[in-house]
Length: 87
Image (cartoon, rainbow, N blue to C red):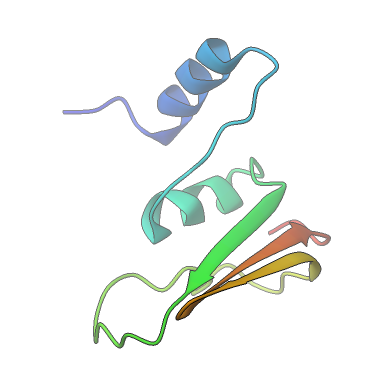
């Protein structure tokens, strides 16, 4: 049994000090958005349809994103956005 997202975030902040904390996976990232702990979102887009899983921005409400950068690769695009309007 875990102690929840808030405890995990507190431990990550303690371990990172002044460093960056990354959240991976749609469910964890959504919890970070809901907690107001997300400054930027990086999406890696590839032409693969998985057919299931957790949708990142479902039930979050209106969020305004500002595109920061795009890196194109062979069959993938990495897009970084700054969160302008918090969830």
